[in-house]
Image (cartoon, rainbow, N blue to C red; front, side, top):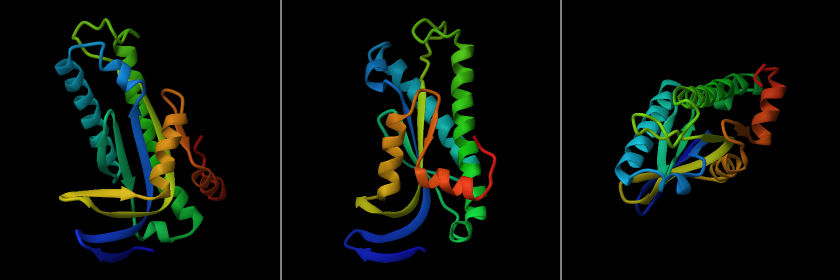
Length: 186
């Protein structure tokens, strides 16, 4: 259930949301493989493409952190429903994550599987994704910048870090809702 409270920097909104963290695996090591301008252009292109995909599925990018994006998906009406409706919503989020990973693999295949030797100076950026669900807070921790915080955000980041390259790791609550809703998403 969403609610609003005021703090010194503005309103804080409680929301039930799906948090998704997408990150470039080995970002710190990759930064040294090419000149900084080439590397940052490639990361920007990658994150912009992910942002467009997230928006196409009704999500929002909350923050860019290094080579990663914190995204969230909320639908106040659906997320207050039963497991079946929430399960359908989660399937949409996982389809978004799957599309992001598919495009990442396609980029690898197009580069000839060699991230350091591509002809157009592009760098292949391997991705990992973590997805969690639950109550979060959205408010201003810094002036002019909304921040999404809460257990689902932290868990999505930890799941991403534990995930294998090209994989999507979901929290137990996401898995349970999908199983209870009888969805067919593996």
